[in-house]
Image (cartoon, rainbow, N blue to C red; front, side):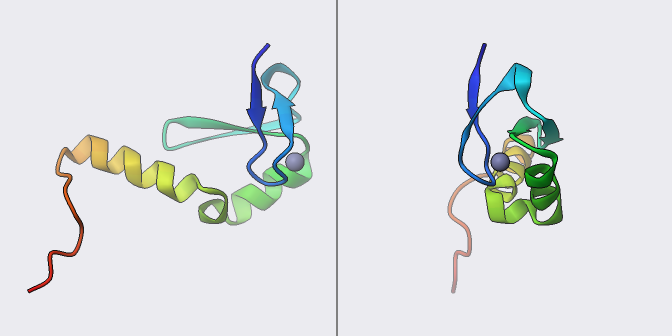
Length: 71
Ligand SMILES: [Zn+2]
């Protein structure tokens, strides 16, 4: 059994007993309840899914470095 953190409420969830799950940016998120799942889907960026998506994009493109070089 693997314990993971529900990104919405922050509680520890057993992967095998999670009430809901969502695959995003190559990562699986687990939730203690369908309610938390719905909140996550409504606003994924708020719960860190945006960072995961950006990281995946960066890994895909290969181009890294600092963003916004300026003048
Ligand atoms: Zn929850």
